[in-house]
Image (tube, protein in one colour):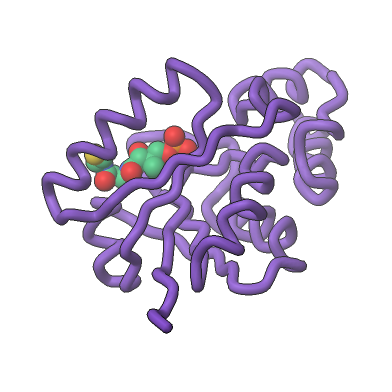
Length: 163
Ligand code: PNS
């Protein structure tokens, strides 16, 4: 039998949400290995450092077998080649995501031939976004239903400290 390919699930993950976890949980049985690849993209100014984002993602996926968390800088396709990944996995919440992801998928495939596989977000997480979770937390709202417990804890600490 052929070996199952390694897939990368890339993103900023600022922070890692239950929507992200849902995609990783559903991707894990489809591939030999899934790497949650956290972008260090210096053009964005994330709330959490890359080390904090790694820690949050690692805690969230710790029970899943065949899942690793890594970081990458620069082009995603270059990282995919270094990591020996044949597939990029993305979650799609709706039309806006689809348009944006379609463009990136096509350019990534044009550059290296790598394919992008989309998983449709589960209805429970279709509205969850890292950006909105940060906004809710910043204004003192409850985010426990949107993020893993470790992330909720770190967000509370961050906003208590006045960030
Ligand atoms: O969670 P995000 O912010 O939507 O993730 C976007 C990410 C990191 C997957 C995307 O910006 C990316 O792939 N960045 C790496 C740089 C790159 O390869 N750019 C060309 C894309 S065609």
